Length: 537
Image (cartoon, rainbow, N blue to C red; front, top):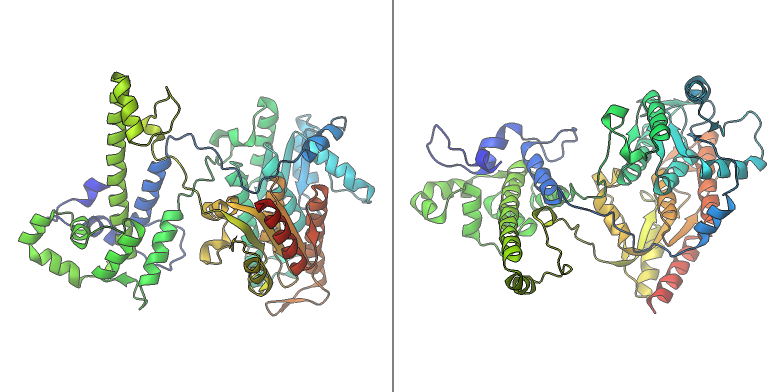
């Protein structure tokens, strides 16, 4: 990247900045939503990937994690239950994927299964289904495009946090999608797609691959049973798309750069002046950098060379910097700093191995706190994921038209001297990005308010997932009323039933795991303040 960035312009015979040669031909507008990376964005992601590559990175433990013996008691209770090899979860009526595809495959391969889709359903089957799901070796969840699958998505999100042998199949919705002969509006379709993307992100964060083809998923489930492996061990040869270290916030830096760029681009030109680019560089890279040093980095020349060629500086002063160019400059600077640090650490390691007493002194001088006798290799340098500032409460749940945070939660938390974090509502909040997960992991209590003004499918999936992780969760669940409207759209009777079924499933799931559930937001927030204040003492 650096070599390419420092190529000489054949026509002018002078060294040009890293952004000029390699990125001008692959620019795109800041607000472009196409699924591709420009050269500058690739440079930032490659730099971040290099920072974490080759490290032994453990998945962070949420601060809100409870020390609870209830789960072990449940395991002992279910020890003598019937055990099936595969649990067939996911979309039910009117779908036929079980009887037409899954069950014939399982019978052919002599694999036992539990099918929760029955002709006659009764309340007594609830406990039987729960036991079958809890004791099954492999959980197969299929979310097809013919149903909303609200309860099934919540169930899958919960299972993805607990079960290491989970197979998840997600079929994307289409434009003009119909469910039971009801056409889905564009707004609801957007909500459904967002919730499925969040479910996929939750699963991939646990290194669980997500399939879009049922046949491949069934073959992978067969491989898990035959080889006694986990879902995360599946490879491309098995038909899976493996995910490794899904919790690493690779794109966080790129999001920060975009935020800074857009905040400085007050005129909406998608370009920054040299002074504005300097401010962006200070914000994203180094607040102590000097203007002359910034010019050197931008032009790829030393200050002495620049003083001889004032035209270069003058050209830069008059010129405008695009987002992609800023990305390349920041990536090159970050990469150079990383390389310097690696070289210093390698020298220190050599000295430590040859001169042990001197090495101990050097370790003390550099503030190293690793155990005695353990040297840090170059592959471990800068591998730590920086922690977020710890907060008392995470304000999860309904967004959009719901204002429960501003009207109720935040005033009560401030009154009790409690800190909080509210989820981002930017354009990338459609996905459960790793940086958002890091903020959740840094909160001691997670509050999810599922209000009656929103569908809240994604929020319910996240709540179920973090309940399964054993976190300190408080729930507020409000059911949709008859003839309710969301964002000016009247919901059908079938839609209300689907979304309320999901709310009922989430409430039942929470009750099973002794999570407090309220139907009033203020009562839920008061419970949160009580628990948070007590834990601070």
